[in-house]
Image 1 (cartoon, rainbow, N blue to C red):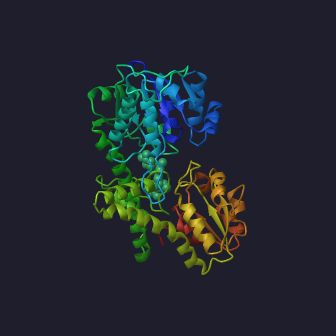
Image 2: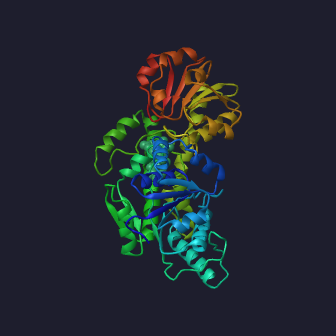
Image 3: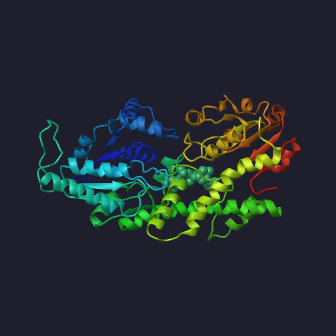
Length: 455
Ligand code: UDX
């Protein structure tokens, strides 16, 4: 294995895989990015990204043009050429909320089937504790099968491949903490790089890969690394659910949750981050990972009431939007409701587990008509709720609306001419689900204004 100038294979072209691949190529390594989705790969080969992530398309195009980054569906060829294999495939929720690690396991089998020399496998996907060990075992099983002669591996000319003597494959866990919309920045300047390894040599290889990343390098066991990821996400989601719960309390006693959070955040032991009250958290990680941790505990016979409450409070928060609107309007039936913001947060087109999904579902259930605008996410949203009317800009969305609800704090919404919004609406009921406007200023403009945790 060439550890000085390794060739890297990244399996999975989602947010994490594409970011890892682009940055590693930009560090000067040769990177092959693999995905089984042919259409997606064809787009990437032409320089078109399947996702909206600021700065990533430029970085990919630059490194592809300079010959350091290529996209393929040929997993066999990519595994054979690589010294280091990153697994960055999705680990979605099953309908009941467990983690589906099927894609990770399939990749592990492929590695065992095609591996042709010493490699380091680095798991970037968020995986339940014990997965690194299971992946190690799956690779070993496939290798054993090949050694016994029943293997599936083939060389380029399709002749059965023998297993080389030094087919030493080590598997490490290196969870990724990047956020969507700031993926590159987060990858290059993380708070820490966590690696879970079984040998100092593997840690050293990863340390070298990350040489240009200036962050504490935390080396631990694979199982600890896996749990660090879940604990981090659950802890951050907990902060949000907790401040949302306090927001509900604020509304009953006449307090202002933003002021409360500001005062609390001055305590360095608590800190200011993830204390913005709102319509609840969404995205591909917090909802999925807290549910997964809950299930993992249940499977172990352990009750984790705090982890359960994170999800319960978040569900209540999302459902509270329509509840609040009903309180303001009396009935929602027949009301035209403008929804501003569909993505789960600004600067992404991602609507996975977005509060907008719950809000629009609840609005439709109350027989309201929904007119929505989002700078990036309408394309995805249309696939889920085709009965929604989409508009070209936010002003068109609020025209003749009987109420407006803001769900995502896009800069475009902060910059709105609210006097114009007020004039356009039939009834000026405005529910600010992200607390981006000043209540007094909104009321002075004539809005019947409500927000989260502020009176
Ligand atoms: C998160 C983690 O931050 C990241 O470390 C992990 O790798 C993946 O999951 P991401 O989902 O991209 O990242 O977005 P993030 O910016 O953390 O926000 C998640 C959700 O929490 C959003 O819906 C956001 O609106 C909400 N949120 C965040 C709040 O409601 N209040 C806050 O104070 C912060």
